[in-house]
Amino acid sequence: MNQQIQAIGFVEAIRHHAEDDFWGGEEACISLSDEFTAEALQGIAEFSHVEVLFLFHEVELSKIVTGARHPRNNMAWPAVGIFAQRGKNRPNRIGSTICRVVRVDGTRLVVSELDAIDGTPVLDIKPVMTEFLPRHEICQPTWSHELMRKYWLSKT
Image 1 (cartoon, rainbow, N blue to C red):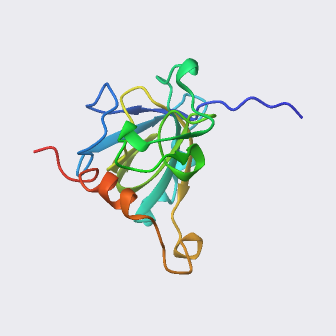
Image 2: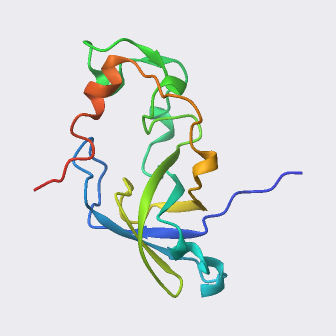
């Protein structure tokens, strides 16, 4: 079975270019493609959060990383494999973010803190359920906390 993945919608956001930090508080809208009706989002507003899977569509194929690198090219942080970081230059260019649901308006889902730029193709939307969150304590290296220090701060 060779099925192509198609975008289910596109992001409408104020940012037109990817940035490393200050994604906190921003709202974005996911506008579903024409083949979907409002019924596709029925019930999603009952959830506080959704997980959005999207395509880093502006990443050039020549920039894809398959091995190890220093996150954000910061030599103070260890070189780690692409699957040990959340960088956009990944082999399949797929991003994933858990966002707060703000409201639903027909075939438009407004979310808060989606770190995707305007025009980003959305591959899927899934409700966040407690039962799918980690069931044990999350552990991560110190460099990753440093990397994320300003990520979810507000730009203002």
